Length: 202
Image 1: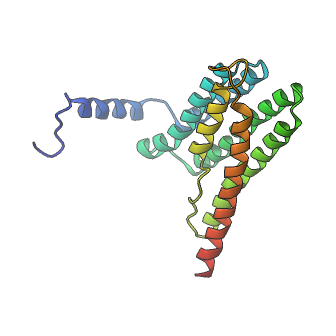
Image 2 (image 1 turned 90 degrees about the vertical axis):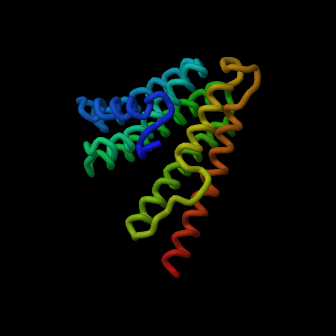
Image 3 (image 1 turned 120 degrees about the horizontal axis):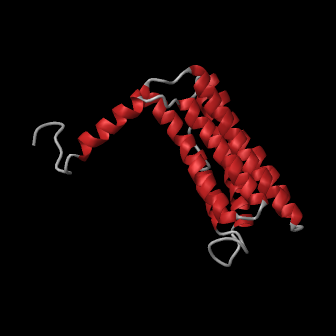
């Protein structure tokens, strides 16, 4: 088999063709980022309507868009410093609005502990991102820690899809998902602080 050939029925060539067409299209990384924002706003609205399964799917698709914009930016060469800034900023907004909507839901059902946990989850998710940004500003790569953005998305998606009363199954995972987010985000923040301290003192 010659280099670059494939025994998968030409799917490699098809993938390359589709990638080239995508790059040549008018689609921009910022457009993908804004689509992710809209979908996460829709997810927050669905949470307020207690349509948790639909909210979960909207959140998942919106979060996938968040991961695609950076990859598409690198692949297409259409990225810009402002685009990278916008991407990071919108990521924080999107996670925050969904968790805020969940907090409103918990307040409506009288679960004050879960409301407080949502507030902590927002704060600590910001700290996870902030510690990495500040570390990289100091010249230290800081991707350590368990509660990365994809992990947080998976946890919160599971909570939405399995919310009691309007989820896929008749058991409650939304509040536990928020509690897990708080715990893992706290641990990750500590891990990153420790990592940066070690790196700067070495």
